[in-house]
Length: 297
Ligand SMILES: C[C@](O)(C(=O)O)[C@H](CC(=O)O)C(=O)O
Ligand SMILES: [Mg+2]
Image (spheres, protein in one colour):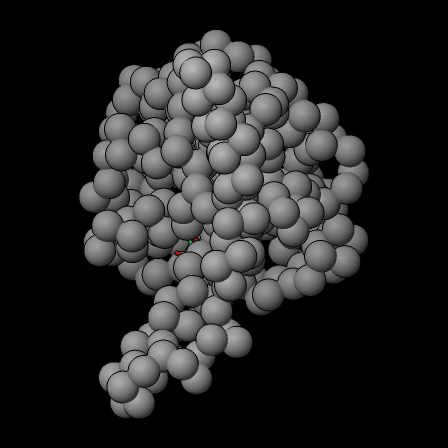
């Protein structure tokens, strides 16, 4: 009730152990705290907090307009309601390496289990769009080193994302991945990989855990969990999936109300009031409230 029981430190320790377990960790993107609870209810291993979703929720494109404090604020709201570890998208760290360092500490304070920092130039854009660019390797490594140094909880996971694949190809991706691992990154996020063979090549070249981004309508083939596990991937994110599903359903609903003058034909496609209350643990709040009343009385 009110918040999830495990502490942020517990969730980080569990996340670290899970990343080295050899079992693929599945992190759907939570577009708000409530969907984080739904993800937990459905037995997933963690929640992803997407920059693309955060921007879209604010009615903005994903072009580096959001701030570190906006991301930290939303992350805290999401992380506190779930027992699952949360991994958050920290874009380029919101500025210079020193800003990336501050971002790490803000996100630690927000209670998330880890974050990823990417090597795009500022202002960044969605990794599946054409026309993006990356900073040189030395600058990218400085960002990662600054983040690693700034961390106060050694279990806070720092993931290094490289956008080099779509810009320079798989060789440069592998070279950057090796440098990021040497700089202290705990997890690699190779963005816009084409297929399972790309992941297998990276797996053969580096020892640290690898993340696969299974975002829809982008540059990557949508690989299933068995294929990802066989390619040596440790964590998969579905960053925008729940938002896309929800918005599609919302569009259909609006069309129906507008066309039919009532939503009654949609009732069997809605989450029932009862199920929402159950997800929110309403009954526990009633008990709590009665206790407060009894104590006063
Ligand atoms: C993972 C990502 O960084 C995100 O913000 O969720 C996006 C997802 C997307 O736009 O589909 C990305 O891949 O750049
Ligand atoms: Mg992003």
